[in-house]
Length: 507
Ligand code: XMP
Image (tube, rainbow, N blue to C red):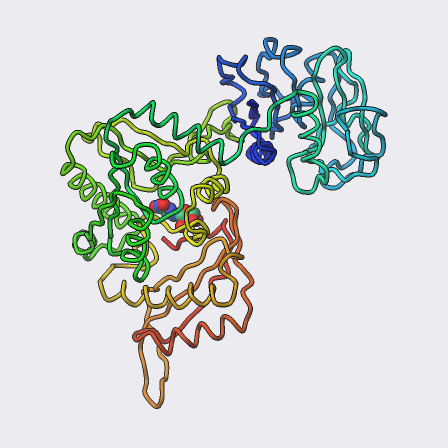
């Protein structure tokens, strides 16, 4: 396995993804928390960073127990770091070193550049430059503007590059990672969805034994894949609970429950719609609504869990981006942890031990594991849907009638996207019911009805997003369908805001 030391670059997660694409298991750890078990890793990658090595606050971890003992690939800041602190020199660069560049020189017979030729495009993003190589440094690659673009250390399996192999625009970046990890470091390419399933099933059996496990299914990809994995490992000792909070998409509860039963899951569907609607009555403030929904969920889930006896474990569909401790770009060495915000936290009084079989996976890997487990591709390809559901897409207070209207609108929009072959091109889509009425005319009648906003975004992780340029013809047809078919709506608008500064959900 591979250790990626994070110096806070926005690209660190991309390095991990590229490494995983090579079927190699890797972990990201902050530079100031190097794991004790470093000997268990086969290679180490040093990431880029928003810091300058010359700055007083520059990350400066002690790598003496790694240098020369493990193969090292130092990227960008990593390359400058090795130069600056080991006898080389780093200085501010006087030419622009951002964006596209081409390798103008590659040292002959250098295994690091196996199958990569001069002229290959690489992507730069740095403001410092390496003026002099560190002690024992051997130049192995240059671009037109950056002489010391790649070097290795004589007598060590240490390689350093100023450009970013992990970004898409470095044409042979993946080849370069393969050259380093597979051919130089000799790391095994045995991390496949199949091997993950086998190892995880084995590990779950060992961990959980014959203890009972309870798991909340949401209809989403993560909890479903977690459930199917656990089902494979412990079968009937897994008790799944699927709560209808009354804020799901149209017919979602029945359809998904059927699907779950069809997969052989031991699942109990709990229709708590009226409990949620009661808890939400009259509340308009978005945060108060979120809290009301979160609390109601905990109460319902807890009631159900208490009906089971002797449960020892709580399983969750937490995935890797939720648990990575990232080095925050502004906070220096302080680390921030992103927390899972799916179920609004767990009640302390449940006192269950937690098991999270997908903790090491990225979203696309969860999908691949799901496919290996035979889960319906349509379910695996679903757009993300927020835990509080339509509750945060109905602006203002929530009533059963508003939920009905929004469910109808949402179904027309989503089914339309599917029918037009647009669904899989969009990362997430949905409709918002606005708290305004506007005047319209239908036939010869004046109407004074609700307005809905459609939203469709492209994104990779929901952290940033842009609106999707849906075809006008599609929007035209959808708008017509909605206004003609959904009683109570006489106006449709399309949301053309990016995130930031807007968010994906309106509340
Ligand atoms: P925002 O609105 O913050 O949403 O741009 C980013 C992504 O997160 C989803 N989202 C949630 N998911 N529980 C969830 O499970 C929540 O409380 C929640 N709030 C937002 C949102 O749908 C989008 O994919």
